[in-house]
Image (cartoon, rainbow, N blue to C red; front, top):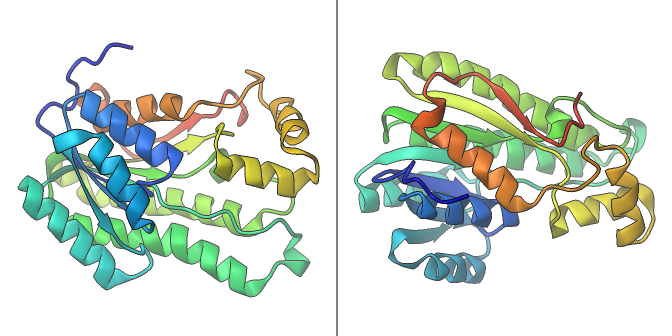
Amino acid sequence: MEPRGLLRGKAALITGGEGSIGMATARAFVAEGARVCLVGLVADELRDGAQALGGAATWAAADVTDSAAVKTAVAGAAEAFGGLDVVVSNAGIAGVIAPVADYPEDVFDEVMAVHVRGSFLVCKHSLGYVRPGGSIVITSSVVGLTSAPGICAYATAKHALVGLMRTLAKETAPRGIRVNTIHPGPVDNEFQHRIEVAATGASQAQAAAAFEQLIPLARHAAPAEVARAMVFLASDESSFVTGATLAVDGGMSI
């Protein structure tokens, strides 16, 4: 798709910026005219990603579970850009595959901390900088609408993000700020490949084939396909969309 300048003049912050969805979203945003700040844990990957995007990108290393670090990263981006128009809370981890009765408590706590506390902190510290008419997008998952055995931490966290989103959508509506969750299905990236191998015990190719049997469109998404949905939610194309759960899952949640 040819860029149409849908985000021209807008400033965006993207957490999980070094991941495949984060980087694809950053590329799509920049192509549509935005400036972006990539936030994540791996400084070298963030630096390389920002450099590849040219003068439209900056970066900051921060653990989203650390309130002070998030506050500093958000303030730095807002200062560099003169405010924020779009916030994408996208950082996440998978946890392990295990039934509820055997699920490690420390792993459950870690998954909840990254997804739920992390998104809460990103939103909390961004709100003072988001301009009226802005957009906040929180990355949930198809399992934020459904679930499956063995993924209690991940699914619980992804469902919790919907509650955070709906609360925030009502609180920010008077300022014209829209808040939505996006729910990707299986994406062709290393994060998903690891989940599939752990869930099935099969090789990567066999595991991917098994998962594709669960998807009506019978394939994994490309990161760029999720990024295009991010552009929609970030732009004025979705100007009357708030409090929504946008599934980008090939029909998996039907």
